Length: 255
Image (cartoon, rainbow, N blue to C red; front, side, top):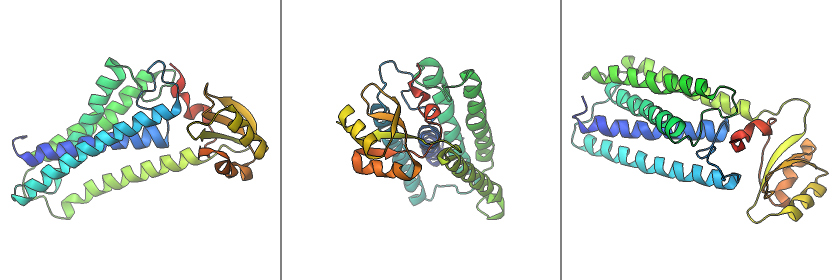
């Protein structure tokens, strides 16, 4: 089954897509963890985000390799379209989540799916089954159906799955950005080099109140009137969050 090069390169591209799905949804939108959330001593959010960036850079390299391989297969006329190719993508997608669970969650212990959960193993197992084992099984079956699968009717179920996944990701992002009603907390990441003097000057400028900060005061949670929070960009802020659950967003700091 894996003799054709298009199958290997399709799985390679799917592996990278699995990494992008993990990084964009869990690291950035839901903010359930970062790549090195549970590594002792890495309590600087900027450093955590930097390593997330290195992770995405690696996924870009893997994705480019997969695309280049598929392009060469297409030039040779050896690329199978339709369900076999989608199956290879799903196998790679599921393989990423299986590798992530075994290596990152359980062997190295550098992060978990939801590290603020009372039962992180349950989240790891559910995520592995839904986004790892199920795509692996479905992709394996689709790859076995070789030939004559490029018709539009046979791709409807696959297109529906992709649309459903996109809708889920969009809805999750929208939910994460909605502040809780009746509260005025916002999380602010200040530019590198900013210290307590700059942070307190920004607080004074927007009539804010300090609620929490990391040791370097590069990341703070403050109570600030909603209409004034965007003024923080004029006072050294690099990122001003609209999230209403800053404690949940930054539970990566718990080891």
